[in-house]
Length: 188
Image (cartoon, rainbow, N blue to C red; front, side):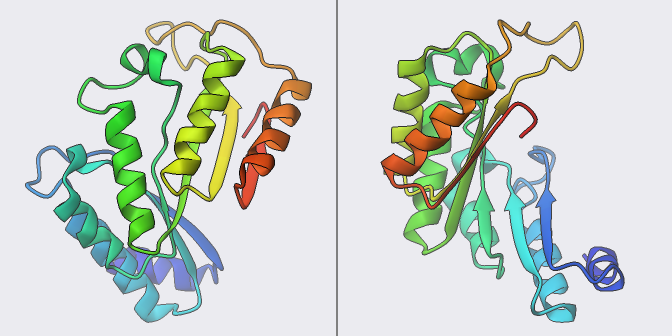
């Protein structure tokens, strides 16, 4: 935590995104460590805005609260894909409903809440819009939508490239649903 805080101060950063995978080797999934990183950074750089792209702590709301009480400014947890494809794309320990519960809980704590999803995995337009509606209903105010790109031949295959026009349409729909910010595009 101290080194992260010192690095943020040294670089004079205004906005920082801290991220971590689930730390299944730790009882609290790493929530206390991430919380210490946020608190240390805010102590040295009180004006820095900190977003945490967080693990879901296996749905444990006590562990999530440890993080949410750290002084972070934006809580982010990615839904990744539509409900139907979740079991193909995500680790079985994470799930669509679990992510929505985490996001809804963070919103109830008056946290700015963000999520993101990837397209190009075989989802339908109706499923994308339904996912957007689910996220908005969970209290998400910031949404990113990008193109899935297969990182290795061992990962799930990409079904198609989504056109820039489709991304623009989803961005427009997102604003119509009520999101405060929607950023959608191939490289988001």
